[in-house]
Length: 310
Image (cartoon, rainbow, N blue to C red):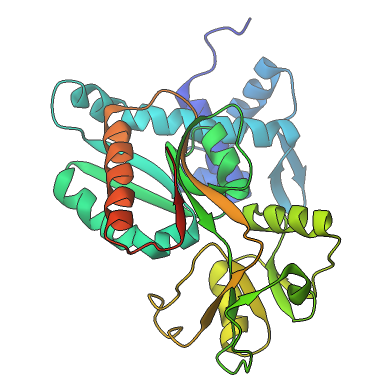
């Protein structure tokens, strides 16, 4: 059992060293003498019984155990930072920082409208938005570096609080110079055209890989990319076709001429609201507003070709 040695300042010192990449730069940044900083980290390593930092002529980098401590330190210090607003929120209007993760496609579809609605309905709440595929931001939810996320899943995720919102059908996005006027494309047809696909791990890629494997189809993937915007740039340039959970890209400036095509048989992913457990009142309020915003967008026909959930 650990003694009372470990304090918040030790976590801040350790994070500063990792961020700076050296003891000397960290000492200058946090205004602590370098010898004293070295002694504090040596004492921390002795207390925990592990080596936290690799020291070399090229600088400082965390060990495997150091990576774990850094991740947990970020979460702990963020919770401490939010503590005053969390306490105040229990007796009045929700306030404080809410760290929200969101699929880049969902963010593009209604992110601006949601942030605007949040500013109006929850003026004391400050949003910090992180966009990306769920498989990439899942560790941030697990470590509580994010409070909630609105993302697409290809399969139900275990171990998290999960609220399904809707099923979204995947669509093929054709280049503007495409001569094909068909209204749909088969899985076999996808094997005959150049595709830009998401780099694994990725929710949409998982759904596609599983579907292609069952159908015995090998897709003609000419390039893999990390971001939704990069995929659309390849389509815009007439180089490849993309597959995305969206049936209309006209709301992306400069991409109004790209053509969405239905894939038959259909492939779906599920939009969900996910969290790691108990939420602050501010995060609860943001969650409720997000669900209402999605429902409003859907009821107004701004998100077509989705399957409603019971």
